[in-house]
Amino acid sequence: MNKLAQALTSGRPVVMAACLPARGADAAAIKKLSNALPSCLDAIIVADNPDEVHGSAMAVAAILAGKGHASVLSMVTRDRNRIALESDALGAAALNISAILCLSGDHQSLGVCPQAAGANDIDSIQFTQALKNMVVNGVGFNGGELNSKPKLLVGAIAHPYLQPIELNLLRLKKKIAAGADFLLTQAVFDLQGFTHWMDAVQAAGLDKRTAIIPSVLPLTSADKAKMLQQRKTYGPIGDDVIDRISKSADPVKEGVAMASQMAAQLKRAPGVRGIHILSGGCEPLATAILQQSGLVQ
Image 1 (tube, helix red, strand yellow):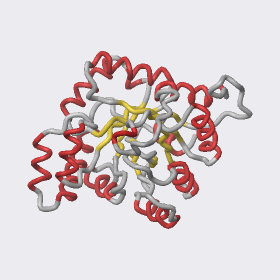
Image 2 (image 1 turned 90 degrees about the horizontal axis):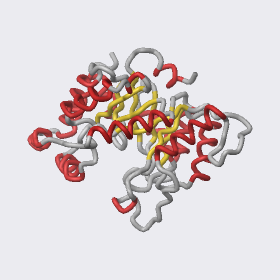
Image 3 (image 1 turned 45 degrees about the horizontal axis):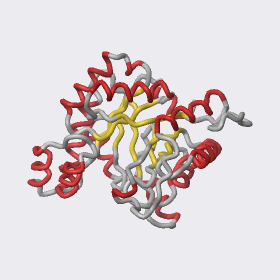
């Protein structure tokens, strides 16, 4: 088992953080990125062009793996058809990348590159299923037998605030049935809403079938908080959150404090298997959140 697989079966809280490849081709930027992330992480999630075009997530994940990190390559079906998805997944396994996080990705018109055509050949659930079939049975996306089985964990995303809850759980069950080894949630700002969702997840026994890992996001400015509130990307962000950031003399420090407090509460929630820090673009903040939340000593 790789480092991430061992952590997921260890019984202790798993600690992950995200990173964002630089918008450039300077190898020194990747080294800087690697040094900014705490060594105690069980895995590093490498983002795949979430908001605009960045450097290759595959390249960054491979370099991190070469430095001894358990790297998780995010792959969005928005940008690749099933041929490219299968080929990149096999390449990731050959480069000792630990896992692939299966995503549909936000529509390119939301800012990544409005002029681009989306692939959307398969959705994230179909991608999860096809990838798991490769790992378990050594069968490619088109049904052909592979020369060897890729050694990869398979991850997916959960959305705690999607309503109605019945359809939310149905989609969650599909991802688990497709073979997701772990599920990262969208960033949690509304603890009560998350707890309501998690109660339903536990009642359905879904927390016993996969590792559910909630995410926290350090807000760095009132403008960013207001933008996320309007877009509802991460579910409800209360006015109290906006007020706290707006009134702070140091919004970044306040954002770290709020993310740390949320992480400390989430790690104690029944059924939760760890914490994921959405620090993409603000990687140095992950260390402070880990320390302030008590996730590491």
